[in-house]
Length: 104
Image (cartoon, rainbow, N blue to C red; front, side, top):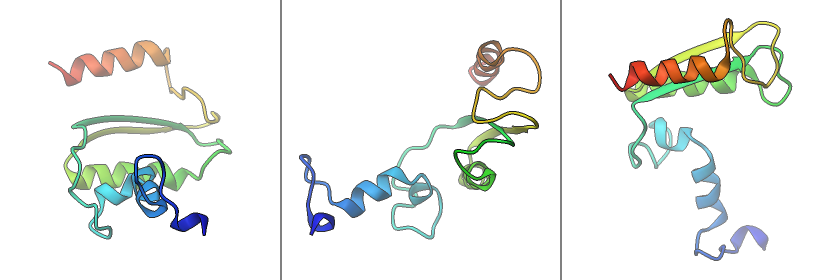
């Protein structure tokens, strides 16, 4: 019966689940494909040793974004967990430098 309930905004459980899943908007498998504005630039860093999610989650997101037409800067980092994973340098400085290249 809980699955049939709506939240305070009138959203169904199915709608909330779809909003939580980026693939709902990025792949033509789902009804939500092309129904949202997607950022043009993405930077995804992930540690190969993370225990929070499978590496294929980030890989699938990067591939779907690329297929959608977004520019994706994707790297996995050996020996890092679910952290600010960087191969070199500082995560904050690297991110700021990347943003600057995107907004040129």
